[in-house]
Image 1: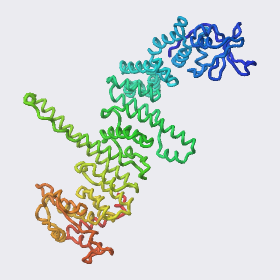
Image 2 (image 1 turned 180 degrees about the horizontal axis):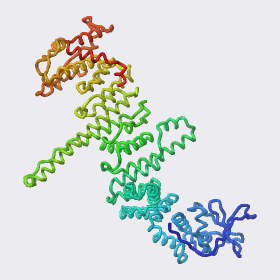
Image 3 (image 1 turned 120 degrees about the vertical axis):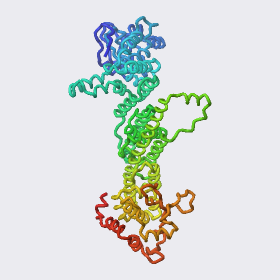
Image 4 (image 1 turned 180 degrees about the vertical axis):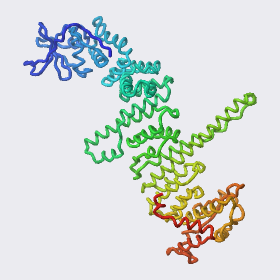
Length: 635
């Protein structure tokens, strides 16, 4: 760190008690008696007019306005920038006493000299001139000195802005980052960390090579949020710094200044006293400003910031009650790379006072919508002119092949991402399903936000439904039907089917569906379609369904109520496409209050009737029902 010394006389300032003034004062050893008293923020200085008035235009004006008196003249200097330290430094300069200037005190000295008007008009080579030369030729040429100087301007924001100190420091920092992106020896923090890493890991560590890319991030992170925001804006506006370096710098700053925020902070605010509550509110407002400023600096490019970091910011935004625009900006960034997230990161605490839900599922739904939106097909391009058509025809076959390969690669990435997100959503549903205050509509909304083809199997979705049914045991039968409508029994594994067949919480029609698919799966085992059992045929015939003919495609305009429809996969021959059957069960709707069907068959009897199948299906069902219930519950 560079420094400058001015003056040659030894320091002769001392503290003593003045009997006439009944207080402590600061004075300077001299053979000439003092004739000047200056009061700065409660401290008094017993000094001499000549050396001070010869260099300070403001003191000249104040003395000229006051009447002459045999008593020492008293001058008040209210709101003196820098306080007594800065004033004493200027006073020592006037007396020719040696002073040391560096990046730590140059701002306060410059503001104090400006306050006292120590300009060249008063005397050549005055303090302002010397400070400006030192600032331009030394401070701004050193990386660490510039950072320290900029940080010290936060104590004098208005003075520093008027004098141009703040803007000059920011310009120099941004210029050095853009000019020397790999010159890691400029960074004081990086150089110190590099020495520690070499001593412990050796000089060829890959960690050192990666660290050189963002050498400036840790040093800039020392700034307060206002100065940091302006500095990062200056760096980003040039457009030369890679977005991943910007993202890495923001992550370093957030980890340094954003505290680990617990969800019970809002509860602590309510239970704390008034004074503690005010402090907590001030702290929250400060952190909220910091968080929203960081969000506004986030790069828009995909991958510039990790999905995990964005989700942590979103959790903090919920707890600190950040603005809706900030939350939506985070949701958009997370949705672009949702396939990189994990379930733990998605468990965002709910900060809403209108409901008692544990997690904020609405923001997760918004994130999923943003993810699906990015893979939608682009709008139809406008008609091309004949010239464009000819240019298109004239392109080489190699370029066309390259475009086709890129299109296929993009389509493959899209499909793979959706498969990952579908798994992620189902496991997320398993976690939030335990919340007794989670409405059914929100649960099904998230489940249906994933396209059907993205779920290769429905085992994880079935587990989520089972957990939700156990946590909401008071659900009515219509709600259970609506919940289970999102489940495709055709995509359940054998283990899941065995568990579902014994699940008393599921509606009867779902259990029958599971049994039907297991029977159909057994008939297809030998690559030959076996004949359906007579009781299943009778059940289908009762609803005018011919089991020997493939059913027509389901119409979206059918008048049958949605909750009474079940889509069941038909039997698949080796060379035919998968067909579906539509089976309508009268289940609990036809049961009277005593649990009896109008024809006198109770629900258990219905089960027995449905399970009384020929030899081969009966063997399958017996295998299902003989499984230990406790083992199924563990699954």
